[in-house]
Amino acid sequence: MISSDIIRGYTDTMILFIVSRGDSYGYEISKQIKDISEDSYVMKETTLYSALTRLEKNGFITSYAGIHDGRKRTYYKITEQGTAYYKEKCAEWELTKKVIDKFIET
Amino acid sequence: MISSDIIRGYTDTMILFIVSRGDSYGYEISKQIKDISEDSYVMKETTLYSALTRLEKNGFITSYAGIHDGRKRTYYKITEQGTAYYKEKCAEWELTKKVIDKFIET
DNA sequence: TTGACATACTATGTCTGTCGTGGTATTATG
DNA sequence: CATAATACCACGACAGACATAGTATGTCAA
Image (tube, rainbow over all chains, first blue to last red; front, side, top):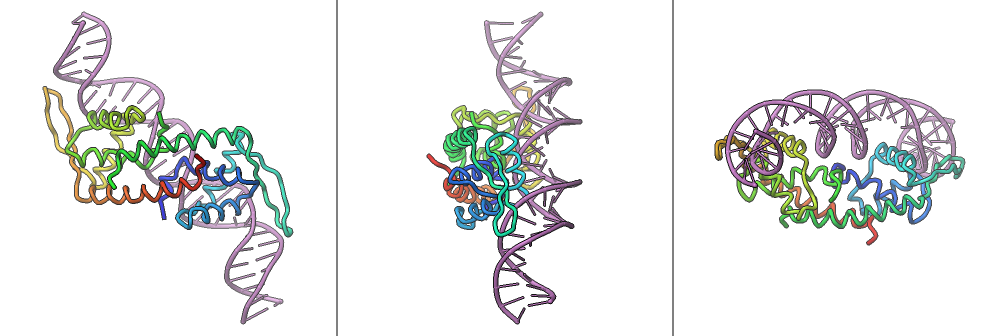
């Protein structure tokens, strides 16, 4: 289990990755992050939902209401800006890896 | 130039890497980080000095006074706990890379 | 039928690391 | 003599992660 502090600044990227594969909602995004990381990372609920709010405020995702089995859901869809931002973060990540690797002894 | 927010949580590790190669002081550590990262990352002064304070408070480094050409310097030396912590962070970094990579499209 | 658990989300406040701003003081250099 | 480089520190602001707590519905076994 990795600490969240390392991840800081990449929660948004993880979420954008999920929604780039198809519209999703908070609870499902949470599960997918756990699955994709093979149980190595579980995003805290409050972290996730506040990230979703932030992403929408920044125009990287848009939301719409949905209902499934009588339960309300808020679905999120990635925007063009969101896709562009995601790509930027991916490129940035590659550079970040190279930099931090220089300070790591394996 | 990578943003500092990504690096958050790894400034301590970078500093420990420097001092693990030999005692050093703030100003020099700053320069070495810039050099090692090949100008991709410049740690802000306040970030660096507050990290040094934190690391010492946590027992990962110890300090001693030095003078060079009439200027005072505060040298830092890594402790056993610091070395152990550094190793932990290196292992953690390897895992973190693997996890985040799963959310990145190259 | 009831109680536990999963689903789905929100509100509020705290903590910590990063950073902006600004300051002190000495030495080197053109 | 001014400017840059060296060497460091205080203070406050800010944002993201998180703890805690709460609302509300659906499912399923005993």
